[in-house]
Length: 377
Image (cartoon, rainbow, N blue to C red; front, side):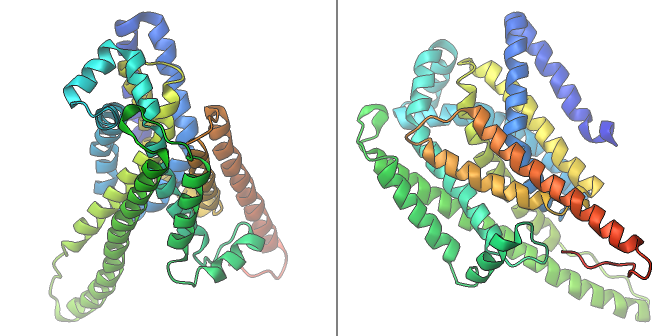
């Protein structure tokens, strides 16, 4: 099971490390290894959230996520995305941006740093919306009941998460981006933050809305198919499969890719603290992205989220923390170690709470006269 799920990750790791040695020797090998660990530590919560979405998709789309999705993640977000950022922020052509990446690493890093406010605002707002929509939803299983119960009641107010997100964006633009700066083509950092944040919010609403719409359609079609199958058994006819599942899976796949893009912002930016070399950056972060994807599929196939029911809660709290950190980094620098530890601590706490819950349920079922199926918290 482990080899089947992580086989591609092991292969990519071996090829990536060999390529690093051929490209820059053992120094490059060490840099790529460090970047891989960095990406995994910063994106473990991404894997947990992805698993919650991926478990609704078929085995075919899970394979697409591990193949085409990886190409998008590695080449799109870890290689092309930084170049696009430089091209847009510096108002230069993509070819010139690539030339800077390979031949003028210091200038390239400076341009990416100048573009950080827009990156942080876009990613921060996208992740914040994921967190808000999660905590405002009334769920049968609650981790921090004292907090989640009142928030679920507030969640009945229409568009509350959007209103809060816009308020947070406005506060961030006023508090963390008050000063104008003229370099990198930006006349006003506040305007840049507002524009990028609104773009992140719109992206979430469009992609998330489409995936939610088609997910609801899947449930409706499954109910109709079940009824049709019952009728077919009586008449002896065969029911043809619907094409709707493919559309729904595509939009959920698109949602996963945008989600991964938002999670990768801090990894891409943090990588510049380790190296300016775009090749080593793509190799290291690409290896890390492979493990995140393999871990996502592993969690789905093992049913880990069903066994450890609070893991998804911990991951979403980590998303909320990351969203806040991204917005704060518009003005202040925060170590990637802190960013990674926050997510790890929250997920570890939710895992331990899940273990304690499972033990309590098992003990209750073992007591004489206890019902076989205890109600979940």
